[in-house]
Amino acid sequence: MKIIIDKHFYEIVAKEFPEVEFYTEIDQCPDAEALLGQPDVMKKENLEKMPNLRWLHLFRAGYDMLDMDYIRKRGITLCNGKDIFSIPIAEDVVCKILMHNTNALKYLESKKSHIWNDQLKRTELRGQTVGIIGTGSIATEISKRLQPFGVKILGYKKTPVVSMPFFDEIYAGKKGLEFVMANSDYIVVTADLNKGTYHMINKDNIKLMKETASIINIARGAIINQEDLKDALKNKAISYAGLDVFEVEPLPENDELWDMDNVYITPHACALVKENKYRWEKLIIKNIRNFIENETLINIVK
Image 1 (cartoon, rainbow, N blue to C red):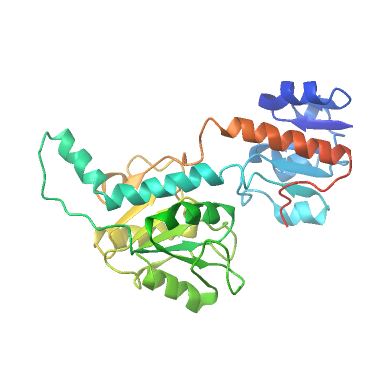
Image 2: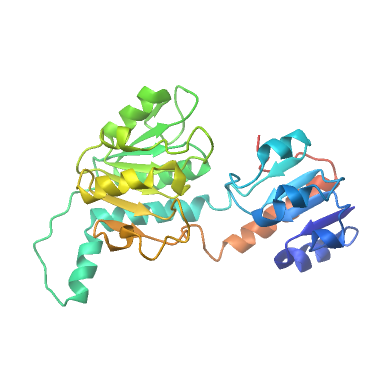
């Protein structure tokens, strides 16, 4: 069996599976049956060089950058890392909420200016409502961490369900999205980016939000119409945004989001923790073993 894998994991898997031929470049072995790596190596023109390809393992959770129509047409199985990042992203969301709820941004500005500002008021997180767009593993881990604060958790998903663990209420459809947007103090975006979710949050539903409400986006920038979001933030139609992802990345140096005092920015980094390497190694080894033994692979993208 021949497998191409990202060079950062080559030594680990070569030691674990001495019976497998591992390579780090497609041109070294175009007849490989599996390709494990980053999205840039999974472009259509690269996959076309590999006639025997049966399995792709993407070292990301999101797969919107891949040509899924081509992959499905060829019958290639795609796996991703959807559970690798759930815990660090969930912790980051809690941080972004608390940065606003505790006036942390304002206190940091006061510290820079050496100003003793003891007049800032805050609102307890207890009793507030958090609406999560998307109800996958990231959303579930967020809900687990927010429930002890005493908040109400609303979930929005594409297909209706009666209930889900860790969510108080679940909504679906256009009316469901509008209800979640209108009744939440924090909107947290965790959905996948696809044709149905592109700009799903825009001026038409942002205007339904409370003036005191906020948006947190750790999914994909293009799920939100960024210009509509900027307008809402500039006009104080909503209170705050905690953003890790943007429509254009890196966020251009001259983008006005950088200078807004009601925006907290992280550079698409909310999932980056040292524990990820161990989780990736564990998942990769398990899936290669399953592939060799014709067992069901983990994290198959449907």
